[in-house]
Length: 350
Image (cartoon, rainbow, N blue to C red; front, side, top):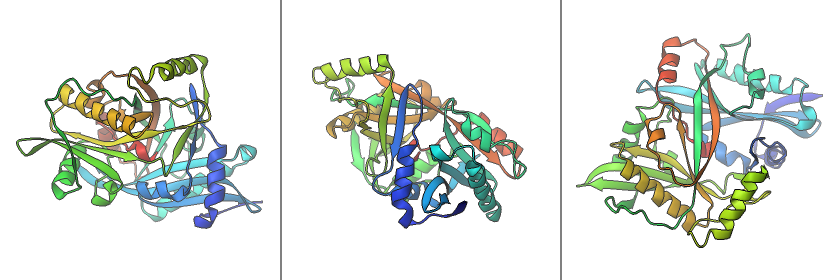
């Protein structure tokens, strides 16, 4: 018999095992490990609860919900982010996934919640089975595609030295600049000092005025993306790059069953969408990845984001996912604003 409850740290080992057992298909099949602490990444997302399904003494399913404060139409609203929805392969089609989502619904109702968000790999239809045509609340709506660009680490310096990039701290000036920029986005989490405490912050100034702030975070100590399987042509491309990586000053790329060492551009806030400035910042981030012996630095943008057409065309791999949003109070006007605007989500915590 399967029963359900809130998880605590005593469940850490079994949650790590469950996470490791459930991969993601695609051109590059992945598994996301969470060693050594399953709960640490959840803390980055916000105050979180993890529900588990248990048969006997074994955890066979999980789902997480995190409370966040986000910008919608430049105002602040609560958002509930749903993640870590997994059911063991041996226990699929037994109603476990449905019951886990029911528990999330019950929690949302106790919070008088309106907006709930989840992220799924593009082409993965399975979550739609659980999050559509439910009696309890409105269906989740597709709010568009997010593309993650993974730039290969490189030791090549930018050809343009117009902008000087300096390490900075999370001062009120820097946090204010970040929030002023991301308030123009929909669903961007309101940034506090706590949100950036584990990251590196860089600033570009012009006559003491901030032109850009970039926040880079390393989450390898919280999550590890492991390559399970590659297509034959992807294997070929990676083999060629690895043969010549020293010659071209590029990072070495992972093989099958190896973790992808990756930095994340958590935030990239700009006073103006200057292609030279953006290219300089991405080049700097690529150098940081190379210096740390990491394969990639990644940045994720929505299909409506102005930044999408401004990013440099350096060597990169792309992955796509879909944002799904539900309004339990049927806030149609706000949903319309979100879908027509520029949604933003921090993929370092996905």
